[in-house]
Length: 182
Image 1: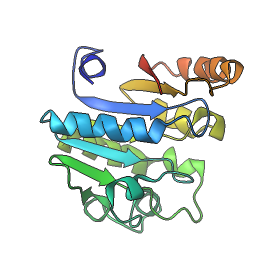
Image 2: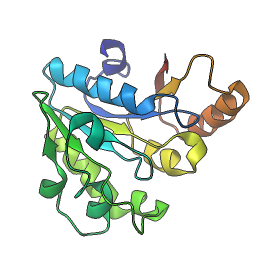
Image 3: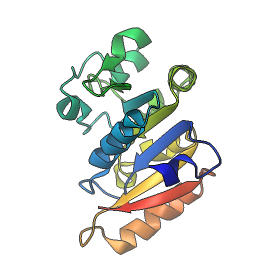
């Protein structure tokens, strides 16, 4: 956490966590990173942006809705989607209802407003993004991040797929500050 936190000279900002493919463990890494920041005294938010497959609500025993998708569709306010957890200093925004969800919602003025507000209210925002193989979601979100962490699963992650997907995220002009071998 310290190395990631100070990788671009600051411990603040938006840290996007992704992986080349599903089931690499990125959500668990994102959750543990958020807990680590909060435990170190940083006001931390974990945003589950993997609307199709995310499961922050299960890991933190919070409600799935209202969440990110509901906010982006204009059905909930920022106050309604922020949920306190049992971890001091950690707020979670669950994925919300996935119905009628599309990529354009992640690449919207509403998403920009949400991230701007979160960055103003929290020291660190950990963004649990979909895997790179799931489509352009992580790339769209990556343009808004200050740092990117890539999770690879030991003995499981396909090296050819990983190289191809890392090239894509490398084109998004956001520093990849590290990789986690899970």
